[in-house]
Amino acid sequence: MSHVLTALAAAEAHVELPMPAWVFGAIAIVTFLVLLGVLMSFRDVANRHSHRSAPDAAAHAGAPGATHHGSGHPGQGH
Image 1: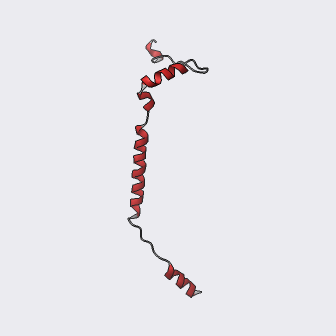
Image 2: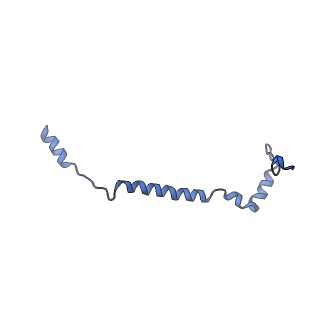
Image 3: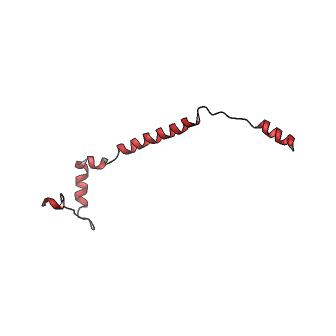
């Protein structure tokens, strides 16, 4: 039995990582931060182009269940 364990221990190869383990974590964090930047760059894009969305919004204003909230805040006398 001890010969089998000795042979298994000798056959086990130790694989060295190409870089320190913390670098893999740093790469993952940087990748996710870049993806977050891409995601946030598209934030609120639809509202930047009111000339394109205004006709569509006007067409859907009379749809069943649509609500009109008026303009301004209630305390402004509108």
